[in-house]
Structure formats: structure tokens, C-alpha cells
Image (cartoon, rainbow, N blue to C red; front, side, top):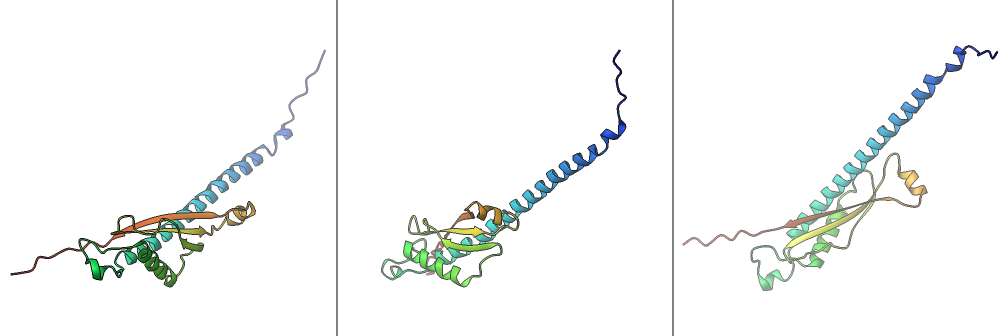
Length: 159
């Protein structure tokens, strides 16, 4: 006849501790993920704000050809005038928080001679993951594009 041992109630001690540690790790991972995503979104919005300001400044930058060709329905632009105006504005503007570097990217210019397009690329500095991403040999790069146009309202002369 085989005897069965009675279950030892002390063997169950500590089971809830592992569950609490596991759930705490999941909650901490979610909190850190939310903080990181929020930081990236805020850095992107600040970069977009700078690109908007640069595009607005470039849209009303007068090029030398305005004296020969006139204005028309919008301020005439060239790729060079957009690039120079955007560069000058970004040179005088302080870099946003949580940005390590920023620069104008290809695509900055004017597609139609009337619309200023500014493409701005920046490297974000995240509070938690930046060191881990650098360890992997990469960085968090954000790219935004902003467009602006300076339309001219022609008022007919009064008789």
C-alpha cells in the first residue's frame, strides 16, 4: 500500500510575490513606453513648429527676380531663396528642448515657384531610451515637412 503525503502548505509561500514582481515589471514597462512616446511626440511638434516658422519666413522672402518679373498672385520664390531664408531663421532660433541637432534636409525649396517647402531633420534626445539606442549604434531621427505660401491680393485701383 502506497501512502500519499499530505500537501505541505508552506510550499505555496511566496507565490504571490512572483506575481506582484511580474505585474510590476509590466506596469513599469508600460509607463516607460508612454513616457518615451510622449517625449518623441513633443520633440516632433517642437521641430514642426520650427519648420513652420522657417517656411513662413521663406515664403515671404523676396528674390531678386521680383524686380524684373513682378509679383503676380504670389511672392515668387526660388530654391536658393527658400534655403537661405530657412537657414538664417534656424540659425537665430534656439534649438528646441530634447533635440541634440537639427538641419535642413533635401526637399527644402519650392516645387512651383510660389510655395516654400521646408524639410527639417532633427535628432531627438529621449530621457530613457537614448543611451540604449546609442549603444545599438543608432539614434532617434525625426523628419518634418512644412509648406507656406505668400499669396498677394491684388486690389483694383480706385477711379
